[in-house]
Length: 322
Image 1 (spheres, rainbow, N blue to C red):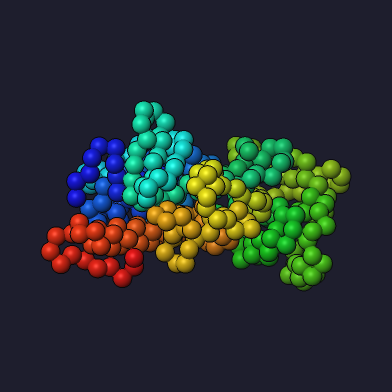
Image 2: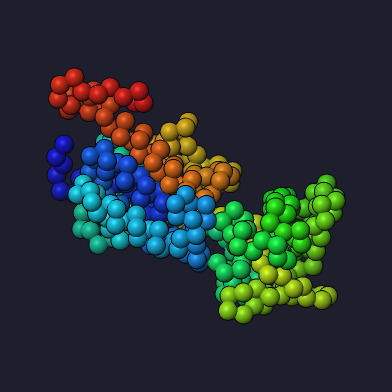
């Protein structure tokens, strides 16, 4: 179905695994799609993507390069490296203002795959080590530091759970609480029984060389030699667009989905990837799967709308998912 310039059936905001996967599926459904990405991936510091079938341990930039290149085979897909400044929903259409465009672009459906930002603990030296020997995801990076002395930074029950989880990769794990008393006593007892030492002294500095963590320094007492540190800390939405559009959020600050179809409380607006993870598995391959899932339901909703409005010739297609 032909569409005028500046009008798309679907605009996808975010060009990570979720957004590009959605674009690929929609392209194969012959939908006119625009992907707009500002180039700020969550895993900017990472050197590999773990657990991605057929692409295990690939560099994140190389994964995205391959995905973008695959989309070049579909003339119905456009890709732009730009930032979306503002979005408004007017008369069942989304008006998307993209930096560098004089007029807003329009679309029938909108997919947000804008992701989240991990809040790094405020510790001297952490940024130089992040992505090399300081990590937030044990499934992504635990294998690379298996059987080595590990530290976990966590100030509450989530940190204690992470420390317990790390025993799958090493039997030498310590939990550093920064002096917080928010780690429940039952978790302290459980960790002690499993051989995890809890250190309540405050970490003041991380020391390493060439990205490799070597030692943790504390306010008091002796330093501690470690080869890697995993942290449990809050995340926040990378983009303010979900809030500006009126999306509902979970207590954790993630976009709430309506049922199991990646839809939101806003008609025509979908979300995929880490922005809506709500405590689920935050892996690149899962984000890609959510993007494909969102694309399927977007295509079905468009087909149903076309069928109802007589846009489909012949008998048309009556999808199961309106």
